[in-house]
Amino acid sequence: MSFGSGIASIAVGAVVIVLLMGIANMVRGGSPNMSQTLMRWRVALQFIAIVVIMAVLWARS
Image (cartoon, rainbow, N blue to C red):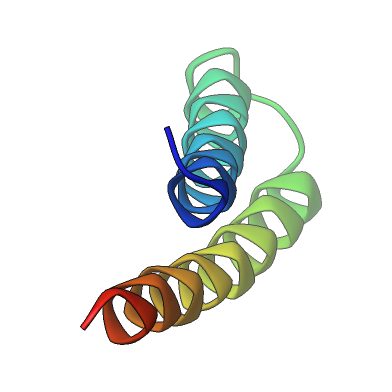
């Protein structure tokens, strides 16, 4: 696995972890404020993951 692929995997993994934390919070009836915070983190991490993936694809071409 190359350096870029590793960074992309970490970025996608972070998105998955935050998504699962949000689902767990929703299922157990947790705080709505925590759900909002996790949603904001997920959106930000998705943006970062897309930027990283696009940069890796650009660097490989």
